[in-house]
Length: 330
Ligand SMILES: Nc1ncnc2c1ncn2[C@@H]1O[C@H](COP(=O)(O)OP(=O)(O)O)[C@@H](O)[C@H]1O
Ligand SMILES: [Mg+2]
Image 1: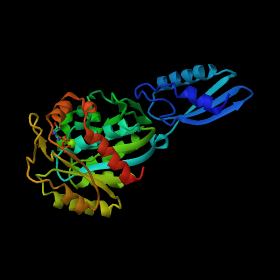
Image 2 (image 1 turned 135 degrees about the horizontal axis):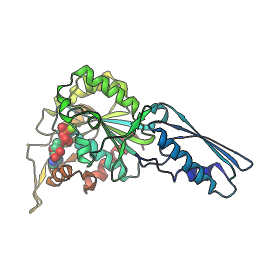
Image 3 (image 1 turned 90 degrees about the horizontal axis):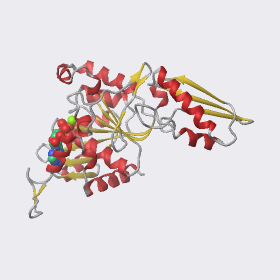
Image 4 (image 1 turned 135 degrees about the vertical axis):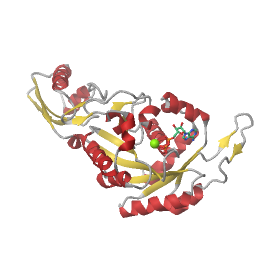
């Protein structure tokens, strides 16, 4: 019996609520094997007492199945969510104003990365509405305990949490004032139990105001993706955003143009609905690559409305993640 055998056994145990296993949640701290006796030390955040007991029993049962295992002892210690979290890269998605498709781009980036086999989480820090949960068809309130809040797993295995799902009422959000939003986002960041993730995509509040700044200051971001449309004064917005990222010492990883064009279904002709693309201009202003140009696609609107964005089927997604990996060197 080796430590790997035990890790293997533990990775079959799915934590209730999140539906990810012990290893993915980064709960294993230590395994001691001596003369067939096994001691397993786990750390946890976000589980209630009953769930902890359940996990303990499951671990004992799973380890006892391993040939050669004798007595099994399990200890679970409560820690802060931040001690559980092991996130490789945090990417924030930013825009000048609302309604340009920032949440869509955050959602599609998450989907694109998950399709490449990455462990992905999406943190919806946009207090102006629960667009991310809606897009992914998530409506339930996240569960948790004193020690932390557990994200909700989407159909394709993306961990999702939205600050809006924790507010008493969706509509309350609009009357929130800047400093309060900032404080809430900060707390929220500290309390979510993600476990191990390759990527955490953050849907920032629109604009370069308070709330966006807080997120950038309180989260160890790897970089920012800027979203704009051909309708906007794209270069100006990008410059403003770039200035902010420079102040925060966070690189711009790339830009995405949304609603770039429309392809007529009958003739397949490409129409620049909002005039000429500003994508190159944006990329130039950001001194970062153009990662994607997303067309106006009725299928996108339909899937967003139905909560099935994960079903979006387009070559754009593959090329989006390829260019993204190229940029971050993976
Ligand atoms: N490229 C697109 N094609 C079709 N509909 C889109 C597109 N981008 C956005 N939408 C629609 O606009 C809505 C608003 O987009 P969203 O990403 O929530 O904007 P933001 O987060 O910038 O406020 C989406 O729910 C979707 O229905
Ligand atoms: Mg949004």
